[in-house]
Structure formats: C-alpha cells, structure tokens
Image (cartoon, rainbow, N blue to C red):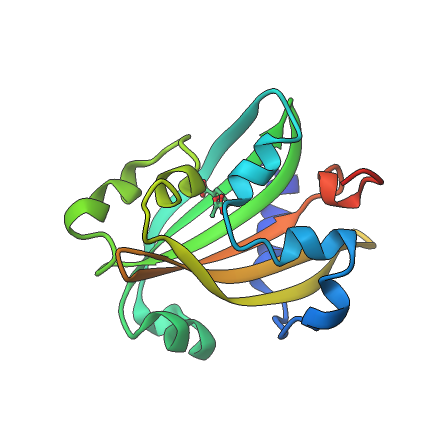
Length: 178
Ligand SMILES: C=C(O[C@@H]1C=C(C(=O)O)C=C[C@H]1O)C(=O)O
C-alpha cells in the first residue's frame, strides 16, 4: 500500500468522533456530504464519469482489538475489515474503512466479504431495508491539512456494519459547487 494511503487510513483510525451539530451542519455544503443518509457511492458517482474502487486491504480483526465504542455500535464479536480508496475520474476522493461483524456476513450477506472493486454502497443500497444511523463526524489533520471525516452505521437486513470515511483533498466536498 502506498505511503499516502497508509497515512490516511491511519489518520482515519485515530479520528476522534463527535456527534454532529445537525442544525448548523445541515445548512452547509459540507453538511450535505457528511450527513448523507443514502449512498455515498451514488453521491460521488454523480460528480464524475467513472468512480473506481481500489481494495487496499481485507482482513479479520479480533473482538479484543476493537474499541469500546465500536463494540457498543456493532456487538461483541470479531469483524472483517475492508479498506478501500474511491477515485473519481482518476483522482483519489475518499478513503474508507468498514468493520463488518462476522454475524453480518451470513446468509444473503456472505457476498459482502467478496465485493472486491464493487462499491459497498452499491451492494447495500439496492436492498430495500438498507438504512444508516449513528452518524458522527471528525476533523482529521494529515500533513498539516484539515480533512473531513465521518463514521456511520449501515444496516442491511437488520445486520450492522460500521463505515468510516475520510474525504481526501481532491474530493468534491471541498469544491465550490460540491
Ligand atoms: C458505504 C458506502 O459505500 C462506499 C463504498 C465503500 C466500499 O466499497 O468499501 C466504502 C464506503 C463508501 O463510501 C456508500 O456508498 O454509502
């Protein structure tokens, strides 16, 4: 993995998540991105011709390696960790790290472990009962630059996963018309 990606994933893992200030944030350009309840993949796709997903990592993590707040959002069990970078027309836009509990990867959802370059949002949001809750936000400083991040819980067939997303410097969220 390139140093650039490693640096951003590490920063994402160290983020200090906070409850969003909904009233203030809802009225801002950043807020529309950070508080998006539907698919982030769809929102990014609308801003480019080609959205590409690069799988950076896929591994298992023991329950003992999860933070207290991750366990309370997901339940006490080992997880699969999926790490990706999403690029719009060749520019890296978003780094994401998703914790998927083992019990989520059952029955119809077993394929989530094998998505590869298929965006998770595309898989999750074609399910009628998909929903997002527990949205939190953070500002993460990487190489002297403040970047926006959010963490949220996605549900598919009433089974949870926890998605952390870091908006990279070229992401549309930072652009005027973003
Ligand atoms: C969770 C979503 O999927 C996007 C795709 C991801 C992936 O493929 O791993 C991860 C985070 C998202 O930005 C979404 O579209 O909302």
